[in-house]
Length: 271
Ligand SMILES: [Zn+2]
Image 1 (cartoon, rainbow, N blue to C red):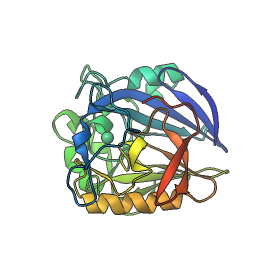
Image 2 (spheres, rainbow, N blue to C red):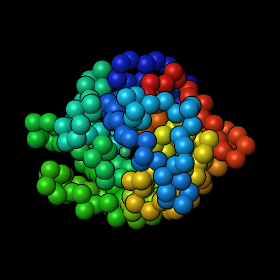
Image 3 (cartoon, helix red, strand yellow):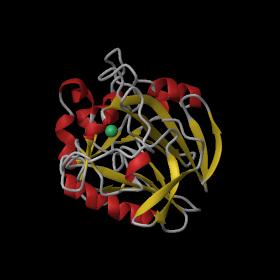
């Protein structure tokens, strides 16, 4: 995986015969009380190494475009205008990256939360991707396709087990953060990239202390097990991670470090 360039809202990585383009939708600030210890209680103390901005954790909100030149998939879509105004830059990020909205036929969602799904609909209420053919989503997260998202419901492909999105990308159910949370396993000629959605919310803490959970995980013990298993798998050679809430552009390599892990970003990170 080779970092090529970065703009304000996008970056470009060469990944063997694939191109990976992280796209910045924005960020969201959350109180550190969202962090939970291994028993589900509040953290006794927040390590000083965890940066706070006006008392809050700042979570970058990222989506990822993966292409082999012929077939491409957009993984997650940002919040559009459905949540806080610090998000909603995905369409500008695609413009900056030179990716046409009409070129996107396949969207793969990691889960049903607003900062991942709402970008299917543009702020003016129209579909963001006029050539959309398929929306891959964990089957247990598909109830979100009503109201604002009802227009795309006829193209939802519910994922119930490991399933090929295309020749290079496999959807892997990883319930815990939500019942239908799904990781996308991307294989290139030079390695594997796990686009892991909300497996980690606070990279400055949860790599070193992977048992620390997030209050909004619908099943914290299940989310913790999924996180530990993925982190361990990511220590293998030529394995990389791309995370929705890792510091932008959110792509890195994981190594083991005592009881925990270390994330080495492949490009200079911005929270
Ligand atoms: Zn999220």
